[in-house]
Length: 261
Image 1: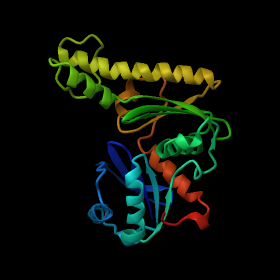
Image 2: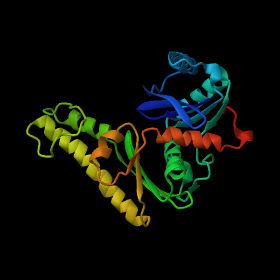
Image 3: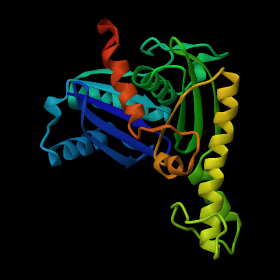
């Protein structure tokens, strides 16, 4: 079995695969001060709750945008699981060609999204990742990453609004029945949900035009299922796209380089 770990700024998402079959996934809060022992113990407990064990894990695919936690998870692989590990970066990309100015700046999660979208949905394809930031990626024919967009994410922007506006209170992030809210909560929901869906659609339109067209637009990330139903451009929703990308990158690794660290 393969363990895939996507360490984001807000959440860490993990999944176990047997071949191409996803057996189970978990979403946890990211703790930047977590130690390898703490993560190893938590992982053991999560696996045992589902009837699995650390001994069944044969490999670890890791994508981390939190630098201190990259080495911590590699230590988990080496000392707690005792398995091979691949940490995704611009040099480990399953054939994705990074046609941008500074390839080293591209986050591991974005590489995984692009690899999975290209391999599973074909290219040209656009990825919309609704997480801490809203990221839009363009993958042209032949698996060529030609650029992307980064915007403030839904939760980040919403928290900024609530913290700065004394009379506005936090609301559940759910699509309202209409854009013209009849009360303050509905009005805030409409502004957040419809507003961000409109932002996604406008950016996808621009990206699609600049890349010469793309039929598939795949949404992923923790808030993708909030935005996708009210977006006119999203064609597919894949909440585990990043984890699928990790699986594909791990499977395409040169065997000689698949070791912890």
